[in-house]
Length: 205
Image (cartoon, rainbow, N blue to C red; front, side, top):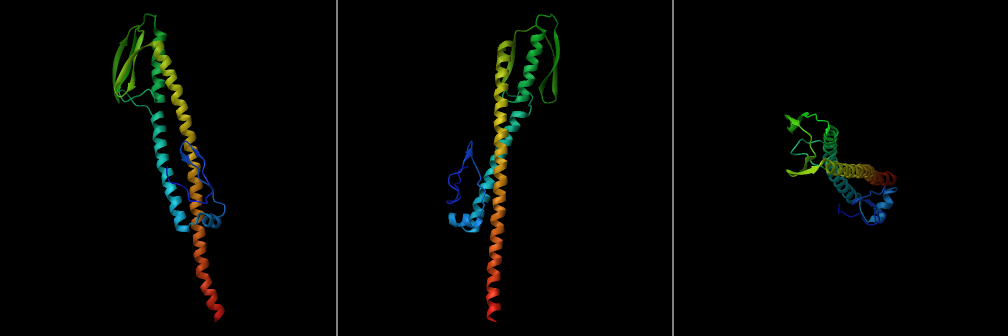
């Protein structure tokens, strides 16, 4: 978001990860005077800022959805929390069966709504989808370590996104209140200007 704030609006704005904070305007008349703006210009600025917040919100929501929504192979990626958790569960099951002499009969998802059945003997390795149709083979221990690390990173990223969204929604609320206050001030000033000539005419008569 590169749009700068009008001068006199309270100096440099703080921000969170590139998202500028919205400053609450206590006194609209003072704000307009210090900013050398009229009501229309101030409304245009804050409405533009509101639209910028909305665009950023859509991008953050898309990133949050990417982390939380499961996709079947080959669309799955080891950056999505549900995908990672499913992989950890499978690897854990394979390791638990190791050395028991029992084959594992499993139905696995080939693509959305399409399943195949496999008989899995004792195995020391698994293949993981890394994204972009790339698959690599790892030992069960390496796969578990990689998945746990990816899961930790994905959850940390999700926490940051949730905090960003909360901060952004607060700025949207402040901006909406500011727009309403400037609009109401403008309406009030227009009424005052309409009443003044009427009062003068009545006094002259």
